Image (cartoon, rainbow, N blue to C red; front, side, top):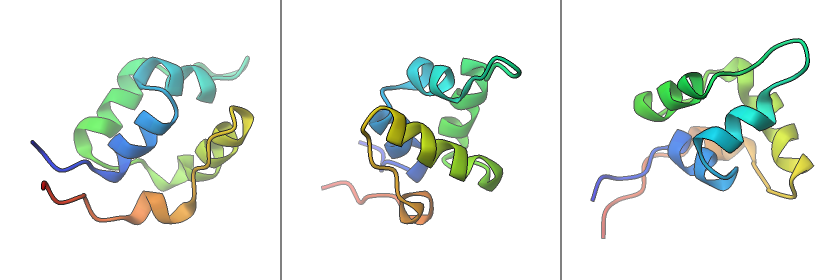
Length: 77
């Protein structure tokens, strides 16, 4: 099993690709699922999105902390 990256952990915490894209979308700007999928594939989320993601997590009672963006991948057991 592949180690989980910070992006995977955050996306999973928010409910998956589609849910994350939906939470980040606004009336002015829609975030495509493919954008979130790209973050997952690259294993990291661009820093410009961190604050928005932390706030999106709060809106659905999910705790996303700054350190989660910086963690090393988990080692496979």
